[in-house]
Structures are given as structure tokens and as C-alpha cells.
Image: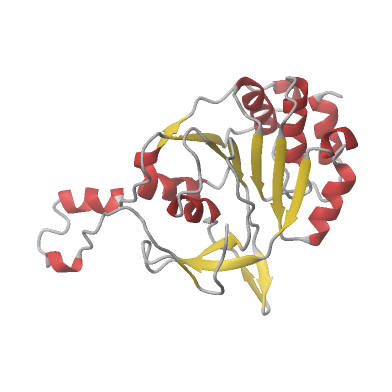
Length: 256
């Protein structure tokens, strides 16, 4: 089985609109082959393309005790992933279903996010941040920034040295840079196999630094040092940049 053949299995499916693009699929495949990765958490299974690509890379480089946990809320996607992921790769993949809930934290006021309600815990080497997708609720289409990664960081559930990969979703990457920038390096990406197809590179990987999780609003710090707020009462500006210690859910007590 080649990467190209595997990718074509997914891209030819009627529900392939939102799978990882060819250029990024090649980057992900090579990144996994080039790094010490055995345990993976895939947030947003979709129809299984990303998980299958990672599994192929792990199998080809001779890993034995590797495992992938995937999380998805849509039954349709879970069913398609079970059908499309080859049996030889599926054996080390566990699919988890989780509902999507709306979440907020007092550390980031006035904003709402979507997260997976339940996420398997573990010492993951690589976390894919690709969900949850928008949801329909009470007749409304709800498309909120994803914050499962943010919640995991606030609860210190991402180990030192772990990689977090974004396939697009630049808004959430910028939010992480704003509030958790002291905790990550920008990891070097791999070269893409252009035989899969070209395209824009929205593939970004961060590596968790070896330091205690710290939370601070870098944008607020920058604004306080500028002249913009000079004539505003300083009491109106939040100066609490202490490490994050708590969070709250708006719909339920969520677990990761």
C-alpha cells in the first residue's frame, strides 16, 4: 500500500469534501516518519483519512507498540471511517464518540468555544487539532472556535515534548500563540511529496516546551506597553497573568 493509493481511497469518497488536503497529507505522513511518535490523539476523525495516513507512516517505519485514539461526534463519519480505513491499519486505531459542548473559561472572558465533551487521556506524542466541526443545535448552525487543546493545556494534560498539529484552523493557532505562546516551539515541518498534489500549506506543528504551563495575554501586555491605553483608568485593564488554574463549562462538567 502506498500513501497515494491510501489517500485516493478517501478522496474518491462522496463525503471527502473536508478531508486533509493532499499537500498537508504528505507533510503529516513524512512528519510522523521523521519523529519519535507512537501514541496519537486525533481530535476530529472525519471519515478517517488523517488517522489512516498516520497509521501507514507508523507501520512503514516499523513501530510495533503504536496506537491512535480518534474522537468524532458524527455517527455518519464514524461509520465511513470504519469502512474506509484498511483492516491492516485499523487494528491499532480506537474510535471514540463524543458529543460537542459549548465551553468558556473565565481566563478568556466574553468568548465561547466548542470542545469535545469527553476525550481519552494519555501520554500522547502527537495531537491532531481538527475538530469538533460545526454543529446544529435547536435549529441553529453553531460554528465556534475549537478549544479542546486549550482546555487540555489549562488542565496540564499535554506532556512535555508532545507535538500539536493544525491542518488549517489558523484562528485557534493564533489564540494559542496569544495565551500560551511561552509554552511552545514552532516545530520544523517535513517536505511534501508533490505527487499527491500541490496547494497552500496550512500545516503547522507546535512542540510543548519543558516548562510549567503558563497563561498570559500577550496581546494585553503589548497594549499596556503602548500609548493606546495611557488615558484609561488602569483598574479597567486586567493585569492578572498568573498561571491558569481553573475553567468552567457552560453546558456540563466536561472531562478530558
